Amino acid sequence: MKLGSLHRHIKFAIFSALLVVGIALAYFRSRGTFSSVIGAFLAFAYAALTIVAVKAIGVTSGDNLESPVLGVRLNWKNIAKALVCLIATFAWIPIALSFVSDTTAGMFVLLTPPAILGTAALFFISRSY
Image (cartoon, rainbow, N blue to C red; front, side, top):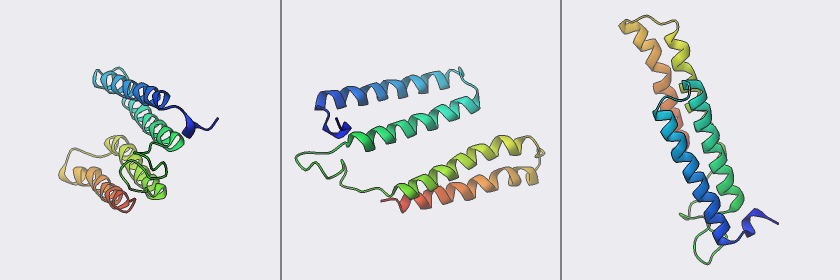
């Protein structure tokens, strides 16, 4: 049985469970239960799982089963590029903190790559639809 042909109530239950897991993940991250690396990994894994579930189950609107919810087709390659930029940003901060000094030049070295990568992520997201 294809996931797209599931009954509406089953789809609702799956997405409700994803919502509950997302709220629990946010709660435990805010309480400091996870280390920063594990917390970041779980957040990205949750986002990937949600994207895969939406793509596999095929969330649609109304009578037209082929149109997406907002009427927008997403370019998944550009979304993947944006995610890579964001992951690189989150990876750069702890690495740079281990060797930069607490000076103006150190802060420049620390914050310039995230600014560039964040701008690139916004660029790729803007081109994804």
